[in-house]
Image (cartoon, rainbow, N blue to C red; front, side, top):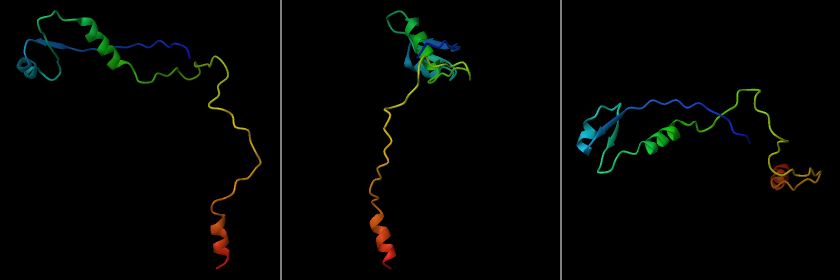
Length: 98
C-alpha cells in the first residue's frame, strides 16, 4: 500500500470556563474546556479534532488506484475432482423407499 494524501477541514468553537456549572450553562454548539491550575494545551485538542475528522476509510478516485504488484487474497486451493460424501444422501434413500 502507498500513502494517500487527504484534506481535512474542521471548524470547532471552544467555550473556555472555570467550573463544571459554567460548562453546563454554555450553548450546545460550543465545546466546553474547563481550565484548571495548569495552562491549556492546544496540541492535544487539535490532535483530537483531526482524529475525529479523519475518515474511517479513504478511497482513490476511480481509475487512479493501481496496485504495486499482483493482488491475491488467501492461499490458492488446488482444484480437485474428488467428490465429497453428501451428508444428505441418507435422506434421498429414505425418500425413495416410500
